[in-house]
Image (cartoon, rainbow, N blue to C red; front, top):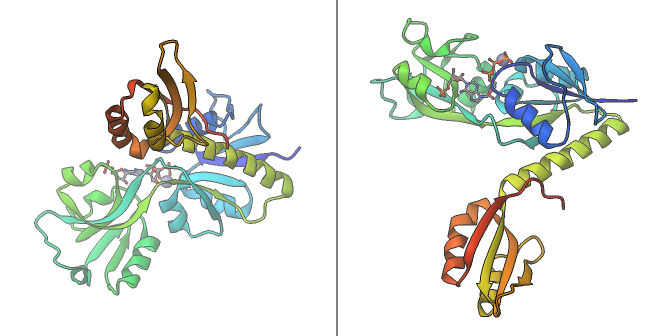
Length: 285
Ligand code: PRT
Ligand code: ZN
């Protein structure tokens, strides 16, 4: 029986969210052992635990069929894989940072500057797109200390909260990439593996969609129903159930997280009462 081989980071920033997503997709990965490869009981898959830097190459070479990895790593490694889904976690940006006090009036002032980075490929592409000739100094870790020890004038590194830059007296002057975890796949999956991947993708999309949507329950006087339904189109249309109290109904629908507060105000103004907002676990369409 063919199994879909799924690569995830062995330890680090992405492991927790990747395993949580797999669990929400109904894929039970037996926990608690330090193996490199674990078989899943309830889906034809096995999980390979790898260093994130190795995932694109293993997916390209077919050692793994798909992988959960930062887009920054995918672009830096430049292997032959497809990005098939953005996953919404592991968000960060790759930025150029300078020591505080060194002002940058325009990007051309980066000409001739020595920049330390672990992302030479992405940085050099960005520099040539912007016609800048800077000197890239590749280092594998602790990039943020390079300016202080005289190794470089600037750095190009991943930033999320910005506190590492701050405590090293650096400031972010230019974002060259916005990144998040992505799902990548190899180019030539067998028909069975493609079927398994399609099932997994369907589940991932259902989970993602549910995260951005809430279930709304409210009571309204019957003469406001038409108005309220305009604000709550639902997946098809809202469900309306008469209440025991004469002249009132209960309305059930879904609402996008982004319009949420805006719509709530309109619902209240239209006469809605007892509004309940509930999380949705999955949306199957
Ligand atoms: O051992 P392995 O090689 O697998 O792991 P790793 O050490 O290379 O990677 P890891 O676990 O640190 O990061 C995995 C992925 O998480 C990265 O490739 C990014 O896609 C994503 N990610 C998200 C981050 C960050 N946020 C992040 N802040 N990766 C690294 N950082 C580092 C950054 O390099 C800097 O040192 O955190 C520091 C900055 O953080 P702030 O919050 O102080 O700005
Ligand atoms: Zn790594």
